Image 1: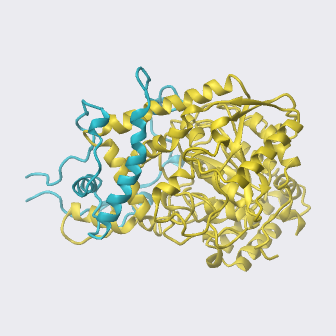
Image 2 (image 1 turned 120 degrees about the horizontal axis):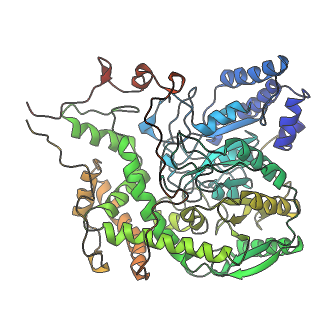
Length: 494
Length: 122
């Protein structure tokens, strides 16, 4: 079905005008999910064909009654399992939430429903969104459709793979330190992390509250823009949701980027220090920068001197917040309880020992350590101060340029298992996505080129807070000239 | 009647000497102490592995002590200047969860409440 592989906006318009029914679209997508074999790909944690078909039928009924359909009419959308859904279990990739059925929808989910989207199911992820490879899921890894022996990136690995494999037309993920942008880059799709405060976090299982942000994955930039328009906007249920008008993000796609100043941080392209930038990635990004010049943009060399401290800063701030947020998983109000039958303390310990995986435990321990008496100032307060310096890097940069460009990930997708025993090595791969998270500014990853071995490489574009429209304009213009345009994973049998 | 558990907060006493001299290599005892604070029961075979992994990560994090942050304000939150307050009124019934809906997800309930193992001495 051509419409399934075309643009999201075209598909929604086709459902709206009755060219195709939402049920036909849902059935075609479910058939693909079934053919792919959920177990084989590890992409979905929860698929319920009848639930999806009922939702699609409701959209068709609405149209039959003569009611206008929403902006995502009939679009099959998958949801990262960190998002609460009132009609589907929500595990956040963890054993501790096995079987949890939230009594409410996350705001972003409710807004997708209201826009007549149709949910395909819940997507695999690193446990509690902690990871860069999706290997930390309690329910098994997800495989990269470009090469099933490699990781899809993380933590929103399932969300990226579903879009790359055509097992959903768009998906939602969450990005705390790169968990949307990095898997988008490694899987060859578009992934957008909005400005902190742009999308309500209500109903997103909290990891690091000052960093978490929900955002879309889509096959093209315009599709991501359409989803963002639907999920963005103030929500009284999230105190950090900012009352800003939602702009015409779809309209921003197609505007001429001519004259935009594109900042190129020297620190992002130098293969020095910890970045571990692969030559193939470096060459592709340099080619992408020339393409941006070809679109009429001016390249401006800039400096982001605190980039090299981003990993250290992030892994203090994020783990500190996580250790606090994950205190709620205690076997009392929801989720799994393991009770050795002694007392409350023993129940807490046993529940959390059995419920959490190795990476989650490591981060809780690290976060508790950096917040503990005697270490609080040396680690936590210090990291918050360096976070200020990282923000200032961006303020100085945006005085000179409109958008910052560079690689999303220093590496292409790596082999499954390569970094699982070395947490620090895994953390260092996040170096290019962490700074924008710490500064709260929006970033997008757009497919830039295939590597020599045919794996996707992503171009990351970052704009100042609330400048998503500008980001989308440049991303969309680049997408049209990208050597990766139209490339799809060969590992996916059609 | 006495409460068995000690305090849950981990930063109850502010550190007064935030110098890098205080950052020593994490050891087994500290890992076990932190695990207790975090209500995590570690298996014996996990302890040496996690100690070595945390030591390596902390070694990387130690680079922060080299950064000059004199006079720099910490950033704990971006986006909102001040968390807004909402009126102290109940949400309309359509936006509320019933007690049954909330309790439905609990592992053990009784009499309209959550059941926990005993934690006070008779």
